[in-house]
Amino acid sequence: MPDPPHQTVMRNERTMLSDSSGLPAIPGDIVEVLRLATMVQTLYDQVRNVPLDDSARQRLIEIHRRAVDAIAAELSPDLRLELTDLVGPLDEERTSASDLRIIQATLTGWLQGLFQGLQYVHATQIAAAGYTTPAQGAQHDAPRAIGQYL
Image (cartoon, rainbow, N blue to C red; front, top):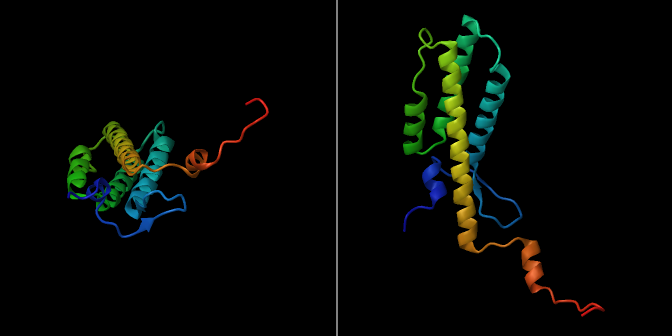
């Protein structure tokens, strides 16, 4: 039997997070990637319309490189390759501010697509397991009350 989809997406399952809802646990690596993606998105939103001098451009390239490395470290080999092929290495001397903004938008879009895929996999797993919320279960199990109009 093949590995569950979440095992092929993330590098490993070092940490499992679960709540009391009874839903399947989510690998902690996903949480780390989500945290990094949120940080990247916030940073890019804040500097989107700011003119970048050479120093700011180099600093943003370094932050981008570190963020991509941290995200890639949490991904499976196939997704790591896809990510590095998509954003590629940045040359501090030749990457213009416009190029950097395009690469930032590409990374943000790729991360959004990754999370949509993870949400789809998770929803499919829940549906396949026949999971119902406690409220749904209570509606089916509770005896029906007969009111004065019935």
